[in-house]
Length: 312
Ligand SMILES: Nc1ncnc2c1ncn2[C@@H]1O[C@H](COP(=O)(O)OP(=O)(O)O)[C@@H](O)[C@H]1O
Ligand SMILES: [Mg+2]
Image (cartoon, rainbow, N blue to C red):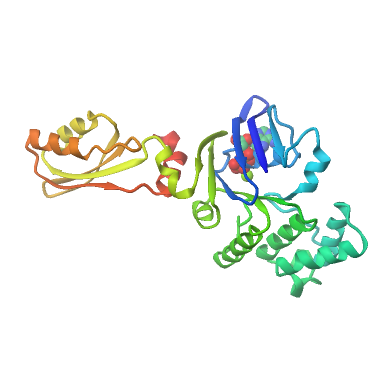
């Protein structure tokens, strides 16, 4: 449904996107995850034809985004980052206006507005002025707008941003429901968002794709993803130096010292198990050892690692 190839975008010298490639299949709900400034909005604006790329290509439903822009726009429901709404319009009025802009009229338009309000649970407030709505309802109006002309693809830019936990839960379950008959690409900088809603995740940082996969399989794709905990007795400086010298160990930190015991946490290259080597080293050095364990890597570790990368 979406095919992006080597997309790059430079803003006056600053590279916001650096040769980004990915695909989204029909019917998928895919999370586009990355910290602020990663390039998410830039990518989505290019896909929705609001921004030209510096280079690269993008296809929606087999159509070139830049050559077939009109046909492409009809296939996408886009909910931008800050939903621009008209505060002095009533919800129903606003949705009719938006539907008309998208080329609908008459009975079709009325039915579409009714449907969209139904799906987004807006019927009860349909006569309210948009300016008086809570942030959660405003987001729902944004969603209703995005799906009014029944586009097969929804592109949602941080749809739960700024919502309280209850509103987040509501919008999330709405997105899941919409996923039953739409392909959805949803951007977020919040990890639990994608773990709960998305079948697949694309992680972007500093304009580059870092990993693509199912939430639970992503960890293995990341360099230095693994963690080993080891608690030893001995001179902590010596221990730290020798542990750091082991192959596949990228980083050693002293987590805590209690009595003569020192707890170290090792950052280890993905899919490498260094426990046997640590055990051999401890024996050779005659350091008493009372804990040696490997921690499964969660998506949270992966994301923390990515977003903290520049502090490394
Ligand atoms: N119109 C613009 N002009 C210059 N730089 C921009 C513009 N829009 C975004 N950027 C920069 O491009 C990078 C990516 O921004 P953005 O796509 O908004 O990231 P995200 O949505 O992931 O937070 C950031 O460094 C941002 O400052
Ligand atoms: Mg953004």
